[in-house]
Image 1 (cartoon, rainbow, N blue to C red):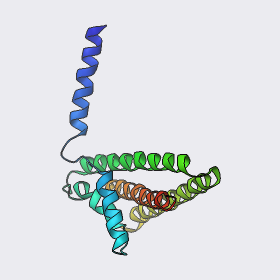
Image 2: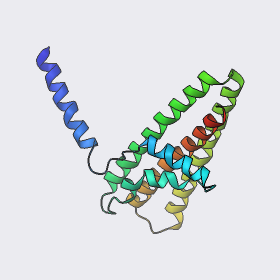
Image 3: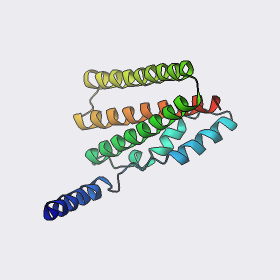
Length: 162
């Protein structure tokens, strides 16, 4: 039994090394929060905070589509974790009605953003010379950005409840 566990652990460690390659997203939610706060103080659009958080993904070479897609998928997952934490915070601090409203707002913010990803993908397929790899990369970037923007909105809502 111990040998099976050790083999599993070794395999899991190898997978973690592969997944944490140089193209990993490393979305730092603390840095994103600081960026958001700075943009709001400066009365600037905080959307650029998402691009800053995705810098590693954005600079992945064009011929490394799989790495870029993985990077964006990891970024999307980091944003999802942040969104969940903020929604839990809202549920703990706000009354049930406000928390429910925040949930509805989040749902439709994210759906609207993801619908734009669908639109961009369909237009790329029918109206451009983009390759399948380019379209996949664009789709992954769009989905990560959609999640990042939703995170920023949830974060702003949570701050407004304090």
